[in-house]
Image (cartoon, rainbow, N blue to C red):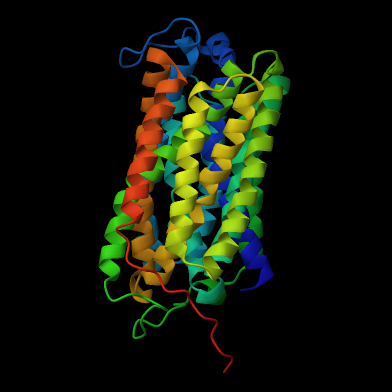
Length: 410
């Protein structure tokens, strides 16, 4: 795959996660700026509006439509990419996301913010079924490394969401946290069109007459199990990354003396978490992917249990370990799908998996708001620990996965 195309696809992954987490980070770190502009945050669905939950919970609820659109949009985005143009859909992703950021920044009411964020979710939903399907069409023997590297870029985007929101909101107001990324989106949309050609992107990179490499006979069973697991892993992933800045804000004590400090600490944790993806990407290309998957999820579940009681410096270490393992698990499921799904169905299956994943991610937003208002983060992470145990049991139901051998040169 040409370097320019690879870089643009990977950058798009970083950008999509940065965009989707901007508002949750702003809500956690700079919620007071909204009250100054719009007045008291409204009570939404009976959420409490006192103490720490006064701004955070109701503001976070405004992003529910965004995450819902992020999930539901994956299926039509994948279909349009196959029927119309993958290159064109990536351009729509960049330009549309930039426009949605500008609309969020100029909003004049809480409900206008909610509508703009929903538009952002629609355009952001394009990335995964299009970008990941392009990456999965290459050589099967290094698919794990390829998807892991792409995952690291997504990790960097998550990391920068906290630091960008903290710095821009502190220095220039919360609107700047959307103006600047919006301009970057437009710029990279233009760069994407300049660096790619339709004949390079809009071609079938698979042969429907040939089976996927190393695909087991019962590939449908694999996809069903992965689909069911993603309900839990999607919730856990989003709950962990959305809650981390607020978790640090509450439990780090004097270490969290400003929004920018919390943003930098969260940034460091997300960067460290990227190491896990690179390590696991190499392991699943060399060893039993099922065994690696089970080991990672078991350690991840233990780390989430540690977070329940961690305070001060301990919560920073517990959060770092948890996020490293949460991110380490991401390329594993995508690689299992890429290896087992029939080539001619791969894009649609990825779109379906992401639909489930981001649907579950959407449920995490109101869950965080309610649980945080009712009893803090300890209850949330206890629920996530139980979910991790269920995922671990589901891994045992997967059939044995054969390691893909390098293909001899023709």
